[in-house]
Length: 178
Image: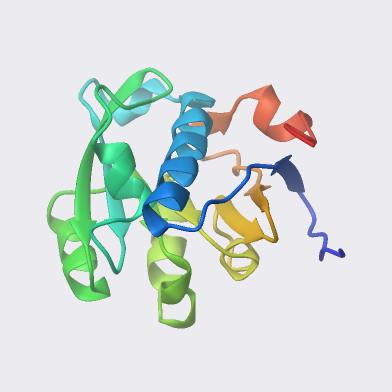
């Protein structure tokens, strides 16, 4: 298996058995996302309240929907509030009117025009999460990628002006499972 290696790009590999049903896969992905969010530290400049997690998904059964059903989901020291969108335009409108601190994009949206949202989030120092290598190539911060029976986390290290930092385990621990 070969990977394209990008500057400042790290791989974390978590080998998880996938199950035949979509709901089981969603459970596995949501647990991995939950664990990852615990290892992101936020700057105090994001404020005192909860962070808004804006998710662009095609289904009400995504891993983020499963994650939103957990009690007291946190990213670092902040609780998360979830907002879900099935189209780009309502997400953009919500972002402008209310703001989002974390953005999640299912892989199907990689071929649509999400570049402006990614660039805006990067300028504001907020976190972007996707599901494909292409997402990371477009400067997304994190991507959860299914390859064979593995769930791989790819990361782009945050810029200096980012309002979050990955804990050392996300940047230096190359393999979480075999």
